[in-house]
Structures are given as structure tokens and as C-alpha cells.
Length: 447
Image 1 (cartoon, rainbow, N blue to C red):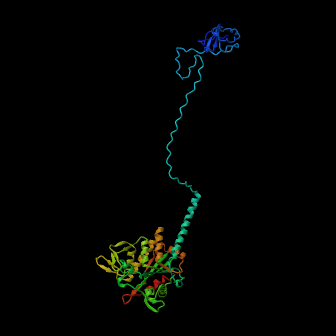
Image 2: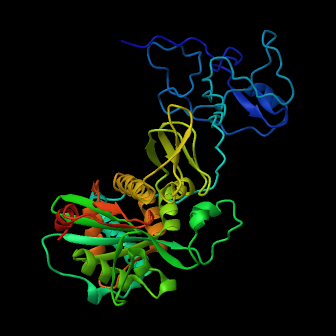
């Protein structure tokens, strides 16, 4: 089917059938051929005749790119149309009507705003990251900690034990028997005491019966350990016995008094020979150490049946019942030789038993102190007790560290039974002698 003639897409161009247009260089535009020839311009070579238009086409029309070999001619410039306003200077020219519009480039995309970032926190001081320890190391250290503490405790115990003063009486100690007897001696060290001090009564003892300066035995006790039981025998210092190595009879405490030429060795031999009690260990402590020991455990509680006082030692108990005593008050309590009570009638009554009553108070005091020390599980308290004891205790030269530890274990929780020694007052009303045969039965329990 033949193609329909296209519509005139270039209305400004004249018809090209009879008088085709040519380019006029002088006028710089396309003009009809005849007008170009009349102007005297050189004629352009004639183009070969165009073939006849194919059927269905208008021969009076010029078709650009028409088939048949005719070369397409450039269209003449379009005259400005009144309907199209002229473009402003510098503006791009608008396309001709009917021409293909140039591709429209999209406007450049607006730059993306930078993402809002939170302000960086100020960096402080950096610490190195700690690595979490492995469980095997935790278990290993947990198992080694008790061993380390035990070794440290042994080293400290050995250090403190080396500071304990040794008494050269090891050759006089007994090694037989079914139990263990410990001779406990409480001494008065008064050589450096100040009589004008406020607590001179507690340090120096009774002002009415003050002994000469120097070491003097004020308390003599025998502690027996046998199995899980224990008992304590107090020996009155005014007991008249045969003094070893002297050939004379005198108060038993004179065997220790340094001003009479005595000492620990003579006292130990006197107890063994005159009372027939074997001694396996010797321990000596002064009363000032007693006071330090009481303060180390935080004080002790003594039950007083009545208010009591002693102006010579400074004892002053204002109410009956349990009373808390510190070291200085305890010292005044155990040294009191004029112990006076205020009984129901409101009048003062001095203890008529004199030295025997003082021995009973000393036994009560020692049992209370040992019970308080044994009941303490605070390691700092025990270390403080060890420090106080190490500064004021003296032991025989055969007691080693392991023996001392075993002895401390045996004394743990100890509440010894107080055993009175049967004695009677002599005619001078100042000294005592053994009361037979009751005394023999009591002494047999310590053999």
C-alpha cells in the first residue's frame, strides 16, 4: 500500500518542484534559483534531475531524505514567528517546531547532607584492660591461701617464741608420770617501780607489807593436765617448808626471792622435794604481764558477792554482781591483802582468811583469763595476746616451739578445777603448815 504524502513539516520553505532554492553566500540565506542567477552570482552546478516521484507522493513537494538517491538539503533558517517570543541574550536557542527536542538532562542532585553524628565523648584516662583470670588459677590460689596463712602464722609464732626468755631449769624437770604438771609462778618485778605513781598500790603491792625491791614470788600454782581434764593447786606463799639447798625451814616463797639467794631452780627443787610433786614444765609471768594480758583480751568479768575495796592496792568495786575489770583493776584485785567487803549491815568487813582468801581470788582470776583467751577466735586478738605474753613470760629452756603449740592447744577451752591445799595457821598467826593427812590425799592427785 503506497504511503500517504506526509504533511508539510517545513512551512517556511517554498515549494521545490519548479523553482528550487539554493544557498546565496552574499545574502547568507536560501533563495530561489532564479533570484540567485539574476544577482550575478556564479551559478551552482545543476544537479541531475530528480527521478520522478514515486506513486502516492506529491511531485511538488521536496522530501528530505526521500528515496531515490536525492541528497538531503539543509533546511533554510526559520524566520522568527510572532507567536514565539525572541530568546533573551545569552539564553539557549529554542528548538524549531517539529524538530526533535534535545535530551533533557536532569538537574544535578542536591548534595546529601552529612549525617548528623553525636559528639564524641571526651576521652579520659585509659586504663589497661584487666584480663579475667582463668578458673584454674582461682582454684589454685584458693587452695594455696590456707597454706600460705599457715606458713606465715608459723613464721610469726617462731619469731615471737624466740623472744621469750628461757630459764635454765631443764635438767631439773621430771619426765615420768601419767600427766603433766606445770609450775606457774607469778612474780613481783618491783625494781623499776615508782612508789609515787598513781597506781603504785597495784604495781608495788600492799603498802603495809611491801617486800624489798627485786623479784619476789607472790603466787605459786601447779596446773595439772591429764587427758581432757585439768585442775589447779595453789600453794600459799606463807607455807612453812624445808627450803632446798639451805637446810632451813622458811616460807616457800623465800626459795624464789632473789634477795635471799633464791631463784627459779631452788623453788622448783623445793616444790618437788617438800611436797613430792613432779614438775614437767616451768612457766613464770609477772603481774604486770597479767594486766597486759587482760587488756589484750578486752577486759574480764568477775562476779563480786558484795561491794569491795582495798585502799592499799586501789581496788574499788561499788556494786555487787558482775563487774568488768581492766588490767590495772585486775592487778589490784589479785594483789589485795586487805580485801574488805560492804555486807548487808552496811559496815566494812575485812577478809579474815588473809592470804588464803587472796589465793582463791587469784585462782578465779587465772581461770577467767584463760577462759577468755581460749574463747577468742579473733586472729588479731590472739596476735595481741601473743605479743603481751612474749614480753612478760619466761619458760624452761627445754620447751620448743612445737611443744609450746601443743601446750597452747591443750590449754584451749581450759577451765581447771580449783583444788584447795589443806593447811592450818601456825601459832604466830602469820604462817601456815600442811594439815595432815588431808594434805597427803590432795598432793597424791598430782603425782
